[in-house]
Amino acid sequence: MNRLCTLLCLVIATAFALPAHAARQKPTRPANEAAVCRYKGFIVLDATTGNILMEDNPDVLSPPASMTKLMTFAVLADRIQSGAIALDTPIRIDRSDMDMGGTQVYLDERETFSVEELIYAMMIQSANDAAHALARASAGSVPVFIQLMNAKAKEIGMTHTIFRTPHGLTSERQSISEGDLTTPRDFALLCRYLVLKTDVLKYSSIRERDFGPNRPKGPQHMENHNRLIGRVIGVDGLKTGYTKNAGYCLSATAARNGRRLVAVIMGCFGPNGEIDKGVARDRKMIELLERSFAGVPAAATTPAALTPKPVATPAAKPLATATPKPTSKSPSSVPAPTSAPVAQPTPEPVSPVSAATDVSPVQSASDNPVSTAPAPEASPAPSVKFELPKKK
Image (cartoon, rainbow, N blue to C red; front, side):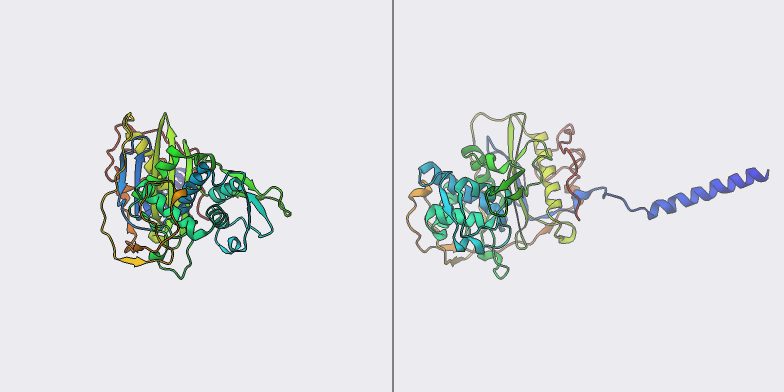
């Protein structure tokens, strides 16, 4: 009898102790980790047709940060096609290339590299010094190259975009309105142009590569900043970006079963606006791609243009670096820079996103419908091969 009472007391004590112990355990991962993402705006479109699949605040003006280098690539592609330069053209590094700061491959004025080697550095390492060297050497000067960037933007139809640098890096003393500015909708136009008209994926799909194998101190190992490459099925580009003013930005493209999507998200931060190394941005992009692939209709045979929606035009402000007049000609034929007023936008604040519009990248895509995209009838199979790196 005493043994039975002792056993009964032990069972009762254990029953009360288990909830208390469970309460002390911290979960290894929040139940809805992607819900903490905060962003300014995003858009997802079909690369073939140009049809918009999902969007939320796609016309917000914001800095693109290092995504700017995609326009630098577009202009370089035109220069190469026109014969002005070639992939094997040697570029002697200048002192001005060395003073960029930010992410670099640490160019030295005693070095010479080919155009293609510097393109790899710009696209994989996101090297600001490589972007500056390419712009300076391919157009004769950086201001002239920026003129070509803005001419190309107008040619593509990026009506609410202004470029002021070839790399997207700005000084902390500068305001948002003094740097490069674009919208998710405009930038999606650029990304669609690049995947359809250039070989950008040759460079943006590389996960790792060495730069400068013949350097005296040995090559610099580069790792692509786009962590979705190799982790999410079909993702093979395009470019990340981050500055304090811009937040975490990402232009991504992925192809599955003969379909290719382009997605752009800008101004991302972690919970409560935290600087989280882009983890929340990456998870949100995975969610957008999963849902869009699940709901994409059969591709149309006739490509359609993506027409930007009208947005309020801010007051004009003259720039030291002029913007060229609209032109449909090749950037190689754009005249020398002339002064022109440039619209100065009023940046919009980052708005929080409710938990109802976000899910973990490995959850069912039909659990929580997002923005304007219809929820698919069946949940797509998760395409994440393994977990994104946790924040350190």
